[in-house]
Length: 341
Image: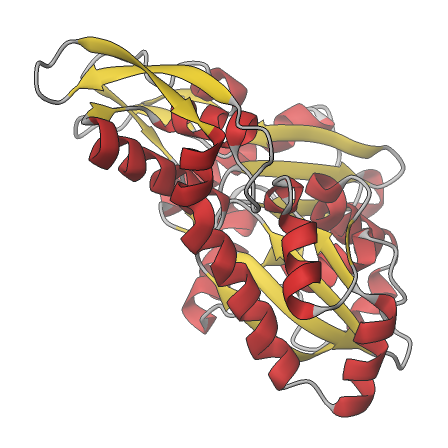
């Protein structure tokens, strides 16, 4: 019956979930978020974009939950519920058979965390699941020659994880994963505003500040923006002005961590592959790679060209979609196995 269901590539991110359906391309991009009642029932009231619209505007008996945190399942039941909902949105309910999926996961993930992902997809209605490292999927989605005997250095900065790896012949030769990325950057901004201005701001406001004023390098012309929050001294609503220089200071430690991951990886890369990397440069994917000045900072510090991939936020999903369309290629990538069909 599987012939009646499409194969699907899925970027199961901490901030968003992206579905690529074979023959149709990317059909779904929704926040990885569920709003539930804050009681024993834990009834779900909203999922995805509808849940995101409720952030910061909910009564006290409701809470917003990220079922996926740092690239792995944090709440199993809500993950299953969310996947069922997204599957209906992506391919509808009038289908025969169960689909197969290629799902991106962090490269440094425990066997228990892998089994949790597999079981969640099985319970959500998938026939079989192939797991692939997100950095490998990002390389496929960037159009790199993944299976050639040459080194490619890829950096994928998502919402929950930052992945760095040198790839050759379909395998990770050297790499490092850190479970801190875009969401942690938002937290750094919130903490900075709290420390400097005694102002409490929400996650959504912190993300907007990052998008509007964030940079990995200090900009020549300082930009400013007004933000609103709750004054921790008076408890009243307060509006303050924040500058791009201040946001740079708030993010500097996090952006430098990406540089440290790259340096660590390059130090462990064989000389021949290192020479390939110097020639071809650094390929950057994920939403965090779009932080202004990130490519410039890395290129300057490492003396290696850096470029942001086309459609960087979609590279992982596109790579998973490509592998879902060409499942025979999975045998050429290490540590990939399907659930029993």
